[in-house]
Image (cartoon, rainbow over all chains, first blue to last red):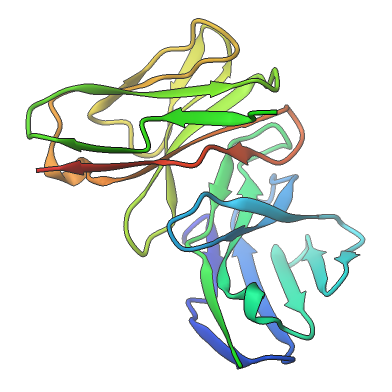
Length: 111
Length: 111
C-alpha cells in the first residue's frame, strides 16, 4: 500500500461546481497534513494545512479523519483559476517527519 | 524576501557528465529537502537534511549526493548523469513543524 493515495482523476467540472478530493494515508503516526496546489510545470504551493477539527478558507474546506486515516478537500463554486493538480501531503511519523506527497489529482474547470 | 532559490532553472547534460544543483534558503529553516518529479508523476524524495552537517537518504538517492555545510545551502550533486535522471528537481525547506516552501525547480535533461 502506498503511503499516500489520492483519487487518480482527472476531474473535469463546470464553473460553479463543487468538487471533492479524497486522500488516504498508511502511517498512523503521521501528525501533520497539508493540501498543496501545483500548476503545470511550477513548484507546489501550500493551499492549506489540515487540522483535526477541520478547517475552512473561503471556498476551500479540509477535513481529517484520523481513525480512518483519511483526508479530504472540498472546493465550492469552482473557478477557472482553480484548474491545477492538488497534492495531498502527509508527514512520515510525527510533525517533524519528512513530507510524503501523493501523486496528485488533476482538476480542470471548464467555462 | 527570496525564500528558496534554485539554480540553474534549466540544464541539458550529456550522459556521464556531472553537475551541482544549487539551493539556498533565507528563512533560517533547519529542514531542507530535494525532490524529483518525473512527467505525470508525484514528488519523490531524494535526500533531506535536518540541520547543518546532517543529511540522510530519501526514497531515490542512487546517483546523487548532497552536503549541508550551512543552514542556508543544500546543494545536490549528480555524478555520471544518466537519461533516467531527466526530471524536474525541487528543493524545499521548512521549519520543524509547518509546511514546506519550494524553489521554482530545475528542469534537467540528460541526453
